[in-house]
Length: 150
Image (cartoon, rainbow, N blue to C red):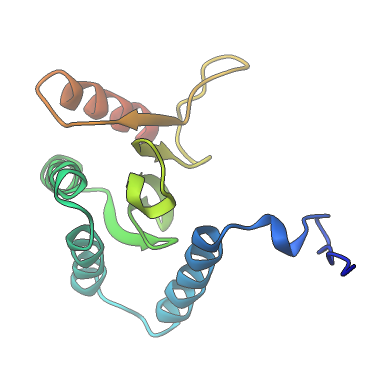
């Protein structure tokens, strides 16, 4: 019987799903592209391209989120992150959208990295299920992004 090799963190190579492996490969490509000094316009186009690959319902959510961030949060810079639409503040990913189809999940999520200033005591959420963008959800997302920026 073949033994599973472990990396330095103790994770077995077989513990990663095909989707996770693809996301890591995509992140490696993104980091390599960073060295070629991509422009803000090309970064935004890469985000729009990723959104364009999504199924229609998720594409509508991601498009509206992208428009909201672009129009209302000028300090955030669109850029892909692990192959997902993401938005950076001062060169660090702050918020990202993960479509359900990407990881064969039940719902899409909007997530925040550890640079987001969402801290609230000893326990707080950093990822939220997102099924649709409507007039009730949009203000909540705006509030979260404002809080995350600090």
